[in-house]
Structure formats: structure tokens, C-alpha cells
Image 1 (tube, rainbow over the protein chains, first blue to last red):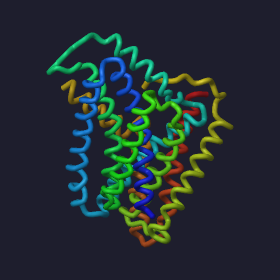
Image 2: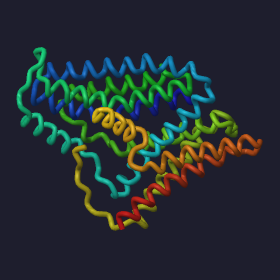
Image 3: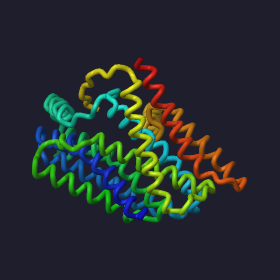
Length: 251
Length: 67
């Protein structure tokens, strides 16, 4: 059960991050040329893979209870960030992430940037694609490594992430446009709920909590936080400030 | 020095994010839960309720600022 949830959480989180990375790569690829952009993507993926290969096995050497306290705390802090932003966006108190607007902004910047060639590649396209994939991918690596180590399921977490990378890249190649129809905030909401739930569960186990039914308690923890998050969206809409139209942001 | 500061700022933003009180709250809550669990008292309910309170506090601060 929890291995399936690990795959699902890793897949959803990776999908969100890869959609954001795809927008950046598409913008520089279309504007400045694909060779340099894809070289940047390849370099970033190599760095991310190296981080997983080094950190994944290293973390499994730490005693499981200590590891779960650290991983639980990190996932809770990280998950609450995701959930908080998703709730604020769903309640209309924070600007929605608009992939079309971000794409247009990236294309404009790529056109305005001057030519600079290093080692035979367009340096602007390389660095923008490299940074985009590396920064978005770091969150995926964080989730894969923490999920994998706390549950001894690096493979399951990596599988979820890999499927998301292939799926998003595949759709991107076919439609050749930013995936603005992907319901990003809904996915972020779901990921926030899952990260917060896993963080609560593992953090609790690490500090000596005995969950009723052991691992069977995890779906109930997820359901609890899903209900709490929906209730907070309702409360923020009902009792929060008057909702103002939000603009798309390019960040 | 500038690069070191930027590196630190990146990781702070990456892990802690917009509201440092959430990170502090999580650490305090886990410590409190460990203390309760150590006294053979059922402590499983404490974390979901505590996390809900931390999230509520963080959201409330945003809503209050926007008013």
C-alpha cells in the first residue's frame, strides 16, 4: 500500500516540476536552437541522477528511526510550503502559475539576450535550460531520496519520477507547446497533502509514536489532511479578504 | 563570500520557504510528541492536530496581512 502511495506522490510531484521545466526548455529551444538547450537538459539530468545515486544509498546507512525524524521533519516543512501555497491559490489569495505567460516571458528574454558561444554551444540556451531543469528537478530529487530512504523504496520513488519525466517530455515533444492545461494547482494541492501526510507519519514513527494499525493508518492521515486543506480553502474564501483578480506570474 | 551567501539563501528558501515559523513549529511539535510518546501515553493524535494548527497559523497570517 505505502509503496504504491510513494510511486503516486513521486509521480505527481515530478509531473508538476517537469511541466514547469518543460516551459523553460521549450522557450529557449524554440528561440535559440535545440542543440544547446538539450545539451543543458542532459547536463542537468546527469547532475540530478548523480545526486540520487550518491545520496540514496548513503541515507539508508543512517539508523531508520533517526532518519525518519529528519525526513519526517523535512517533508513536513516542505509539504506545508506546497500545501500553504496551493490553498492560497485555490482561495484566490495568491497568483495562479500561468505556463503560457511564463513561456511568453522566457521567449522574450531569450530573444533579447545577446549571442554568446562557448565550446560551440549557445551559452544562454545551455545555462537557462540547465538551471531550469536542475532547479525544478532538485525538488523531485529531494522527494525521491527522502521517500525512498524513509520507506527503503528509492526504486519505487524513482520509478514514479521517471514515468512523469517521460510522460511530460513525450507530450511536450508531440504538442510542442507549454502544458498550460495541466491543472498545476490541483496537482500541487494533492502533492502538498501527500508530503504533509508522509512527513507526519514518518516523523511520528521516528519520535516513537505508535500509529493505530501501523501502516494502515497512512491513508487515514492522507484523508485527514485532504479534508483539512479543503476546509481551509473554504474558510479562506468565506472569511478572507475580498478576492481580487489574480495575474499570471512568470516566476 | 557573495556566492556563499547566495548558496545559503538558496537552500534556506528551498527548505524553509516563505514562513520560517512553520519550520520552527514543526521542530517544536516533533520534540513535544517525542516527550509525550516517551511517557507511554498514546501520542499519535498530537501530530495531525499540531500540523493543522501550524498550517492554520501560517494561513491566518497571510489572510490578516491582506485585510
